[in-house]
Amino acid sequence: MKATLKNAIRLYRARRYSASLQELHSLDEDPGDLPELSYYLGLCYTQLEEYEEALIYLEQVVTSDTDIVHIYQSRMILSYIYTITGRYRLAQFELDSLLESGYESAQVYAAYGFVAYETSRYEDAIEYLQKAIEIDPGNANALNSLGFILADRGRNLEHSLELCKKAVEIDDSNSAYLDSLGWVHFKLGDYDEARAYLRRALAGSSGDKDVALHLRTVIEQGNKKR
Picture 1 (cartoon, rainbow, N blue to C red):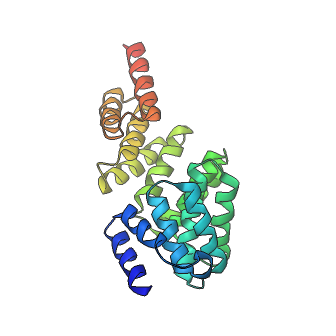
Picture 2 (cartoon, one colour; picture 1 turned 120 degrees about the vertical axis):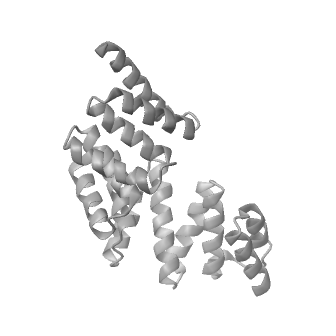
């Protein structure tokens, strides 16, 4: 049994998620009795974007595993899944649980900032993202999110531009970061720069509808200015 689990973990680390999942399911064990099995089943299903299945196993981890690292990571993934599926109250519960257990990290605060923004709690979002950056000044996700929120709310645009530039410097192929930088330039009235970054973002995002909307807005407003 141990050799099979070890092989499944090896396959997971090699990013062969379907093969790892098949190996995990071949084990003659109940995931409820073997937390490590639940953990890797949850990870595999998350990577395969089968989120409802992932939730089943990750919830088992946070209620039965004794490995604190597994519990922390599972709660982070649970918060991510609940966020992208629009279940913000559940996402907040997982993040609150992490903070209450003393697990303060830039990743947690950045995730909390996004949840707060999506639920229109803008001041909370800004506060959480600032905390994330205080902990990790190089956290590109937090830099980008804070820069975008400030720009979207029309606040401190020069600082917003600085934040988004830093995020793009860290990862200049990330379409979300390029989108944010383009949106800040738009808010500043720099239409040419805005179009350039948004076109790069759209090309890299395979036609993301939000990026497309930003680009269309910039083009329409730019035409009006002319």
